[in-house]
Length: 226
Image 1: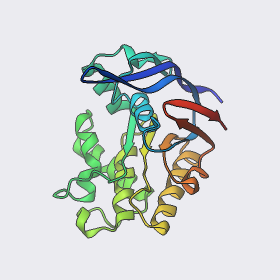
Image 2: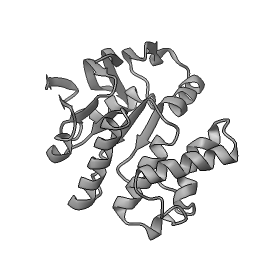
Image 3: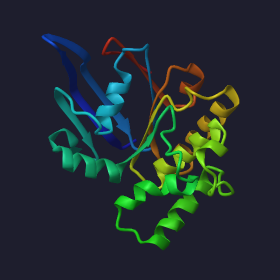
Image 4: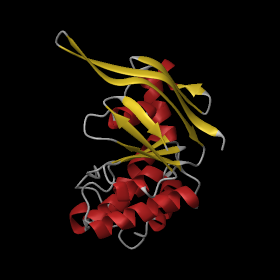
């Protein structure tokens, strides 16, 4: 499997008053193109911090992150924001949908930063919503959808730009078991059928079972590599 992400000697330290809190300790990971990777560990283990660093939301204290051979740790804020919009699709635990926008309008948001015209955006949004099984819910507002449907809208928003990598932070954490199963099946489909590279943070062993590989973090250390 060809590497798409290479994390080398990654450290993250937060400063609080005069204290230093080390969140990640010398992490080394290679993620293959088209891999579905789960990051597990207790609260405070550093898994969300690692996800945010790989996604270019945060910057490491030291170390390198190469995505497709490009070291994103060398980017300034503006270049990093531009890189994220082109390469990363985000799925969050609490959906992060805008209540006053329809499902269609929520999914269209990332495309407003691109050079696509209105007709092209419509085509992309309709395709993304059909992929997640919500082609008949385009004009619905978030309050008119179930939690599982809201998360599917969020996944459509994540894939509408055809990103290189999908990062999902506890995507089933706020869902009942049936809805969670549907979301995991959808992520699995995006991975297997559409060849999307997915990195998912989860506390749930059932969710992690869907991944092709599971990494465990404990107090900022990578404790095993399954």
